[in-house]
Structures are given as structure tokens and as C-alpha cells.
Amino acid sequence: MVNNDPCPRRHVCAKLVTVNKGRKEVIVLSINKPVTIGRHPKLCVRSGTGGIIVSCQDLSTNGLVLNGHMIRRTSVILMHGDILEIPSSLTFKCLHIWAEPNDKGNIFDPTPPLQPAQKRVGDYVVTSHCLGSGSFATVHLAVNKHKHRQVACKTIKARKGHELSQVWKEVKILLSLNHPNINRVYDVDQNGNFLHIFLELCTGGDLFTYIISHQETENRLCEGEAKYIMFQLLKGLTYLHDKLISHRGMEFHLPENILLYTPGPYPRIQIADFGLARPKAYQETLNVCGTVSYLPPEGILALDNKHLGYVGMPSDCWSAGVILFIMLSGFHPFDYDASSDSDWLEVVPDSQELDLLDLQQDTQCSQFSQSYARNENRVKQRILSGEIEFKDSIWRNLPRARDLVGRLLIRSPLNRGTVYSSMQSAWIADDLPALEAAYFDRVLAGP
Ligand SMILES: Nc1ncnc2c1ncn2[C@@H]1O[C@H](COP(=O)(O)OP(=O)(O)OP(=O)(O)O)[C@@H](O)[C@H]1O
Image (cartoon, rainbow, N blue to C red; front, side, top):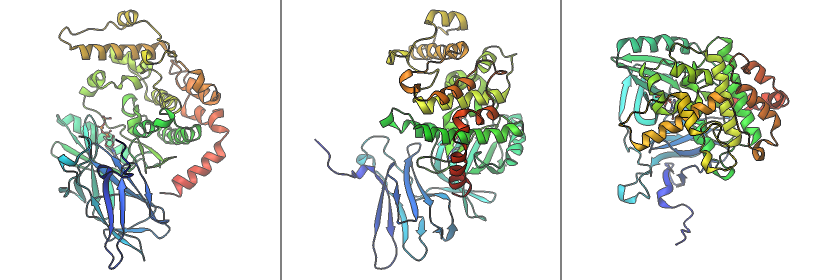
């Protein structure tokens, strides 16, 4: 049966209802369908970890009033019951729509908490509204009560005292960083074994989710957008590398750790989740987390030979190369399923890979973990061999971008492209005035 309902009940996850006397208006919000109210706010709904995130971006010159406080040229998250006022115009109440278990189309349909719990931590009220979670932290929406500013509160639980003191050391450095493409750390608060880190709020989700939302173009971004994102990534990394700070390998490698400041195309991006020391176990869990696909060859070698260290800055450049490859091709250059696409050549046969990496198979391993380990070794092997398959159908028309990817994915960290040489690469330099102008309008002057 064809469903002719343009907006099925289960896709509606929030409403804005006017509270002005006499005039009733309802704005219906559903996932990934942005709505603009006149020339004023732009509203967008995303599904985070099963919950919904309703974001509202101010596009006006006069600002908006959220729960009695002015917000200007920025993006906020609207919670259930929030009051949003367009000065001299309408005032809305935001209502998240609760999907009863019976009403759910599938188990992933959002079920927002009607009354999120709140906890006071220093100057902040931390809500139970979860923005995301990773391997070691959960991130909740919080509000600075004095500055009336929404922030993200990342909570890390340390198992040992020295883990926290290490994190503290690094947070102190991060507190001093201030760049439009680096997720800002505003404050830190320790409560027993818990460390609460208050971060600049990003309302657009992560780059990986953004890339894979481009299903109609097989997960590929158009060249202009990929260039604009890469330009910002290089700007953020240049700022860090100028200060001799790097992401030190694994922390920044995932496109999941690049956040979109606000939702929508040609996004402003922020590098997030770096530098914060991981518990020691993190290095060991790399193998199970699958993070190896973002490690440079020297990082892979250091994993298996603990005495070999590796330097962070060239490794950041490798990661930038991987991310650029993914944005333009829709594939990971090393972590792909060769069998699903006959154009992809497998670099080294299975048996050789296993010999080469001397995989210690645990006899108790399930079939799943065995195939997982096999895949991981295949990925490691492809990275070590340094061979990258540039599909002609994709890269034929992108010779300059391909050249930049090639320079960033050079095996030897000494010969690899740097953030500085990448900024001067023909692919970026040829469009520098346009990139700088867009950056000025959208990042420096915009929200
Ligand atoms: N500043 C922020 N604004 C909004 N959401 C955020 C912010 N920082 C993190 N998040 C959300 O929380 C999720 C988890 O955060 P993060 O990746 O920092 O946790 P982690 O445990 O350190 O991760 P990892 O698994 O990479 O080690 C992110 O994927 C993102 O969805």
C-alpha cells in the first residue's frame, strides 16, 4: 500500500505552537526537514542516540528570545517546554512529541524525555538531554546560568586518580585554545571521579553522519563543499600545529570527531574530542573499536611494536587525507569491502596478510570476532602497503584533489604533506579568495 500521507505521524517529532493570544499557529517539525520561520529562525530536527535534537539557528538581525534571554546569530537546542519569542512577532512553545511504544514505526523512533532531569554543577545546569556518547564519555546539554549560554557537558569517569590528573593537565592546554574550527573548552569541574568538561555547543551532528546522509550521491560531497570543509580542517590544524599541538594520533582520526557547528550544507566544522588523554586501556581497545582505519602507517607499527613512538603532526595530516578521500569518494581508502565492488582491487592476499602481521588468534574467538580481526588486519595491511585505489570514475575529474590526497597519504611521515603545504596546494590555492570570502561570511561574521 502506498502511503500518501506527506508527513506520517511517526515522523513528526516536535511542534512549535504559538502562545500569543488570538493567533494560533503550529509549526510541525520532523527529522531532517529544516523549516525557516520567515527570515528568522531555521529549525531542524536530528535524531541523536535514539532521542531527538531540535536545533534552532538565528538568521535574523534582531535576535531571538529563548526562555526570556536574547540569543543572536547562534544556534541553540530547543527542549520540551522551551519558549521561543520572535521580537515584535510570534511567541512559540516547543513541544517534543512523545511516541508511545505502540505508536512507534520502529524501535529507533525517537522517544524524548518529557521532563529532562537537571543537575547543578558549578555555574552550570546539566540536563539529562543526551547529545551523544562515545567510548569513554557521555555528552549532555547544559546551560550556563550566568551567561545564559547553552553548552555541551562531556562527563568522563576515571578509574584511577592518575588518569584524572593527566586529563586535567591536557584540559588546561585546551582551555587556552580559541579558534573558530576548534571545539572550545569553556570550563572544567571535578566531582569525585567524574570530570565535567563544558564545551562549545555544536548542533549539527558529526561529519560522518553528514557524509552518509548524502545517499543520493552515494555518500559523496560535491567538490566545492568538500573543499570548503577541508579548508576549515586545515585552518584548525594550522592553528594547532603553529602551537606545536597535535591530536596525537588516534583521538582526532574519526570523522565522527569533526562536528558541524550548525546543521545544513556547507557547514562550519569544528575539530572536537582531541588531546584529552585516554585511559591507558584506550590504546588496547583500539583493536576492538576499529579505530585502526584512521591510523597512519607509523601508528599501525607503533600499535604492534610498543617501543616505536610516532609523531602527532604528520599523523594529523594523514587523517586529513583520509577524511578528504572519504568526502570525495564516499569510501574509506583502506577500510572497504573489496568483494562488494569489482573495481576495487585487493592489495595483498589474505594469507600473506595474516603471515605478515602475525595475528595471534584466540581459539575461543567467535566467528564474528575472527572475521572482524581478519578485516582489521586487511585494513592494517592496506595502510602499511600504502597503496590507494583511486577509482577513475570518481577521480578522473578531480586531479588536483587527488594530488593533495596523494601527498597527505604518503607513507613516510617525513615526506608527507603538511598543513602548510596543503594550504598552498593547487586544489586549495586556486580558490583561496573564494574560500576566504565564504569563511568570512559564514564563520567569522555568521553564527
Ligand atoms: N561540543 C559538542 N556539542 C554537541 N555534541 C557533542 C559535542 N561534543 C561531543 N558531542 C556528541 O557526543 C558524542 C560523543 O562525544 P565524544 O566523541 O567526545 O566522546 P568520547 O567518549 O571521547 O568519544 P570516542 O569514542 O571518540 O573516544 C559525539 O559523537 C557527539 O555526537
